Length: 376
Ligand SMILES: NC(=O)c1ccc[n+]([C@@H]2O[C@H](COP(=O)([O-])OP(=O)(O)OC[C@H]3O[C@@H](n4cnc5c(N)ncnc54)[C@H](O)[C@@H]3O)[C@@H](O)[C@H]2O)c1
Ligand SMILES: [Zn+2]
Image (tube, rainbow, N blue to C red):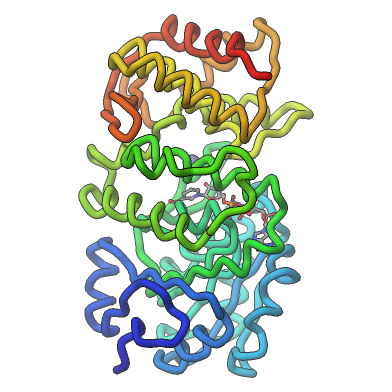
């Protein structure tokens, strides 16, 4: 079998033979991650090397229009397409039922291959459905948002929202391969691109000072995305490889997310909707404040982090009266054990620690810091 590294446009990554790949899937270690600058051609070659009885493609209603046409031509004529209404609201059991029905009606057997073409919603849910259909069939993820390329594509977390709880039902399992192309970013709405950029900034902050310092905060939309995707994936991959099931180190990826999730949940019910990355940007400023007060991070680092994030994301204004409600949402975060609210905080830019217990009054101070921080 040809090594995928040798395929024309695949810039990085490796391909394991199917046997090894299967074993790796069961051990929830890491999948093959391939980068393509010519997605149709590379996918054609890749699929040509795979054996499958049927091929199913899952998209959402936007990627059906923006992304599917980029690969449609090279897919086997008999492939089946399933498309669901785009949006987190549809990452639920009802859509899974539709997907499992579609797989059944299409006569998928255990040798069928599923290709998830879309953002994190498509990858998480399509992967979950494939992992549970007939006790698991193979799937490939082709993430089409920056967020899903740098974050959701690595680490094997799959699942759906349930009863108002995010990612409440799911499994750890890895796709056969993840194929990433910056071609998809051309049609991605700017705010979605920016949302993914928050995770990129986070990767620099938790693991690599040079990466953070080299990032653009002015004209951030004009970037060499390939280099960024590659670097961010290598950071996430390294962390996840050391701690696949999040028993320790992997928690550093939650930097900005404890308070960030609280903001995300708070604005779910309001007119002003916050994208995940927009909320995490607020969370990272608050948690950088806690990093200074609790971990002795230098004040200059706090200033730099705040300024950089505000330049990209602007500032969110909210009344003092909202603060207690936001704090209350922090303590409902599923990452907490017992009474304490555990945070992942920075010792300095590029170095992060986890399981730091923080009190509600400290969280309040952090949110008030954000409220008062200057932004021209
Ligand atoms: N598994 C993990 O480790 C992990 C990590 C982070 C986030 N997630 C999950 O990922 C989800 C968020 O991912 P997301 O931000 O990609 O959301 P998403 O999948 O909803 O995509 C965002 C929007 O962009 C559209 N879109 C996607 N690609 C496009 C393209 N190329 N051109 C035009 N439009 C396009 C989608 O239709 C959607 O409207 C959440 O459900 C989150 O829980 C999972
Ligand atoms: Zn995130």
